[in-house]
Amino acid sequence: MQTLNAEVITISPLTEFVHKVILKPAQSVTFEAGQYLQVVLGEKDKRAFSIASRPSQNTELELHIGASAADSYAMQTLEHLRSAHQNNDLVAIEVGLGISQLRLQCERPIILLAGGTGFSYAKSMADHLSEIGCERPVLFYWGVREESALYAHAEMQTWANSRENFKFIPVVENPTDSWNGHTGYVHKAVMTDISSLSPYDIYMAGRFDMIGIVRDDFITHGAVRENMYADAFAFIK
Image 1: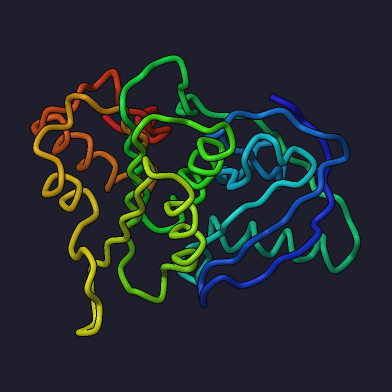
Image 2: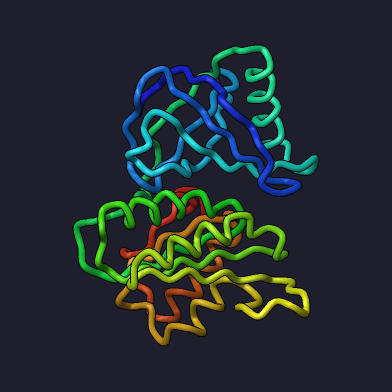
């Protein structure tokens, strides 16, 4: 883990409730795809967010922060970053945290599963796999409640088109009549598409309550617990 200061370069909206934040650390940082950083608001107040950048982008760090009035954890962090940006102040960050980073020392196919802004966790891994020329099959499932929340749909379709072994599958829980893709819960779409999850490495990010349900359902569908990765596992039974 590295502890250092960073400049807030930009804060821009991706949707009504999701903002992209670009931080420029005081020095280049080292992290693995799928790790997260903490924004330090106080000595005992540190807020965790997945790093959306790939490891080679070590001079700027991208975050996707979903913040609404009902989510004080994220909203307070966003206001802290906005204040620093407006006043040209630096923010303290801790980089390179987490235990669910991408594993490259195996040959199993990969499922990346993201709910909402958990997308940023999977995006880092997807971009890194593309950059290093990974030949393993990679399936990226991104689940959202409304179509409007698919803020990186075009970007990820471009990613999927870059190599034959990459697939991007967006899943909308509450679709409009014009939506012609997967619908319902994202992990149910995975289980519909794949008869058994036993051959796969599975990386997951989303609400803790969601991840617990996904883990249990996936295990009944053949997934091997030791081949499933989510930082939420450290906080749920």
